[in-house]
Length: 382
Image (tube, rainbow, N blue to C red; front, side, top):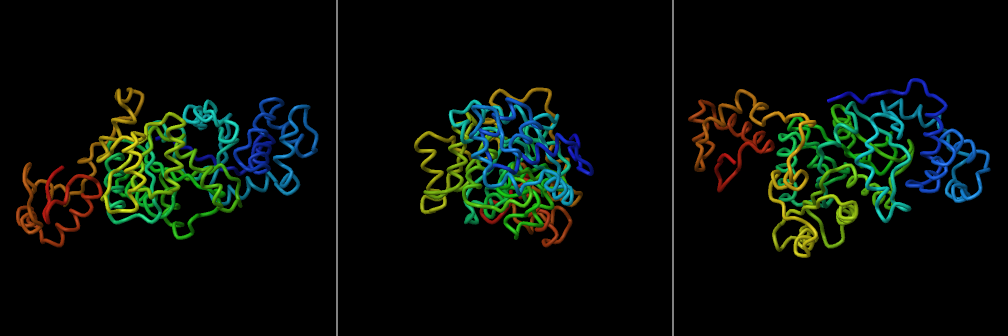
């Protein structure tokens, strides 16, 4: 994976202009983007700062009326640098242009077009990790079933060489990120606040772990607080940066349904995981499946089939086989499980020559990786 880290120890006039425009109007701002396209980024920043814009671009003044005097591009770049973040602009090689193109072609481009710029924290190049990525989203109040299924899906995707994208929230989002990290893969968290803020605060450690190997990304300038409307705006980026979107759990009214709507609007394949018919957190998924808006998903292979129905080209890196990631104890445990049938932990421990507690720990780790399956009180191979 190419390294995308470019800390901003010093900034150019162009970077300061992009940073200023990123924070001067609430994203996404079609008016400011149009001004940049017309006269250039440095000139656009100067025009808004002087409150004089070319005829036909007065809407850019309206969009920036509340912040033009208080925003400082240099200060935002410094704030980003303090947390090890960088500013990615459309001029940068790292800009995920292909992924974001659908936002400009959508019939909602005026209110949901491309971001002006993206703030990123983490070593992964954003364009690289988005080249083979899927989003796993769902309810914040996830059930144990939903979290278990999410972990299985995320681990399976990582073992097949895919990046897992989600929103860093409680519930399904957190389970997706943790399972991807546990499987040794890359994961992307898309925030609805400034890149220098960890939201929710309880996920500060999780977001830091994501930023160690993957990338945390936001279109909001440093210092921006999370707000309800920003989560809805953020959802379009989750859908756009992914090659497919899967809703694991969603109630009748759920933020995940908004991400699903963006996926359909952007032409991204949409999947949904069925759940218990008695579960309120699966009502939204069942409705999407029943209305034929989403494909029924039960395993990572179903998601890969949606995201790459014709297979992936040779330009993508070959995935590391799941078995190559197993420790010595995990290999012994796997070898102790027959190709067919279910065996108990005691039987596995006896065959592998280890105590049941040691076998149980290995099985728990392998379950997250999708290498073994719990079945009727025992264990079997997938």
